[in-house]
Structure formats: structure tokens, C-alpha cells
Length: 180
Image (cartoon, rainbow, N blue to C red; front, side, top):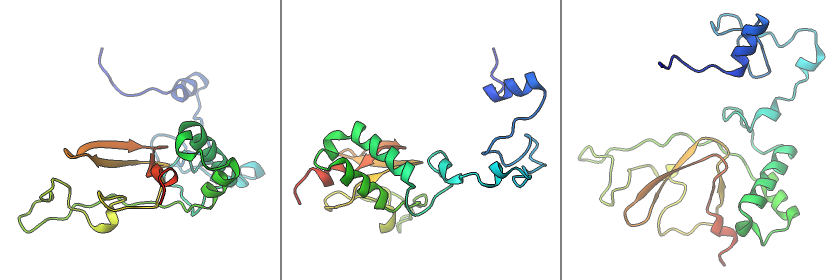
């Protein structure tokens, strides 16, 4: 066998019906990307589509705060998957915390070069500007972070073990369990 690419269920159905399937996430009518999708065809359902519903599916669609539905989904996720972290908060308090928190889109960290052209410091850590670090060893914080999309690299322990965390991971949960 030789791998030639990925075939989706949508591709199979398109072959069966002999036509392109264009949904709310498509920007172009077909794979040649020559014809853009016209979203303003007299159908009121397409012109009134709530694009905010897709924000949790597409990291490029970001606003300042989560919608009511998104906040409810995030609250349920945190309550079920991180219950020890958020056990001191009522459901209402957790929902309010999530719904009022700002969503921030972070840029990819850029490594700085030292005088010897190295991008690693004497502790073996990447040399980053201060704003590129979410948390630093030995520096207390009162910030808890939920990753909605993308990934964050964590360097932990004496050996600076590298681990990548992705969507729906929580960092700094001790903020809610440790006394200040």
C-alpha cells in the first residue's frame, strides 16, 4: 500500500452525488480555490448565521469574551475534568469567572539570541522576552490559564522536562486551591 492523501467522508459523499458540498466553514466552492463561496444568496438563513458558534472550533476566530453557550461548555468541562481544582467554587461562581474572563490570542514566542549567538541561557531555558513567558519558576502568580486552542510548551523540573499542552488544558490551577 502507498499513502496518497486523506479521503474524508465529505469527499466520498461528493463523489456519490457528483457535486461539491459547501458548508458554513468553506471559503471556496471547490478545491481549486478559484471561486469564493457567496454567502449573500437571498436565503435569510445564510445571512443570519451565528458565526460565533464556530469560535471554539477555529482558533482564528477570537473575540474578547466567550459567548453564553461557550462559557457554559467551558464551565462544564472544568467542573467535570478539573473538579479538584475548582471544588471551592459553586457552579454559578465558576460560570461567572469563565464568562467574565478575557480571551487572549498569544503570538508564537520568538527566541532571542545572546551575545554568543545562543538561544539557550545558562539554565538551559530558551531565551525569550518577558511577555512570552506565561509562568516562571520561583515567581508566584494568581493567574489560571485555560488553553482554548493551539499549544503551550512547558519546561518542568530540575531537568527542564519539555511537555506540550494543547486545547482544554489548564495551567496554574493551584491558584484556586493554594492559600494566598
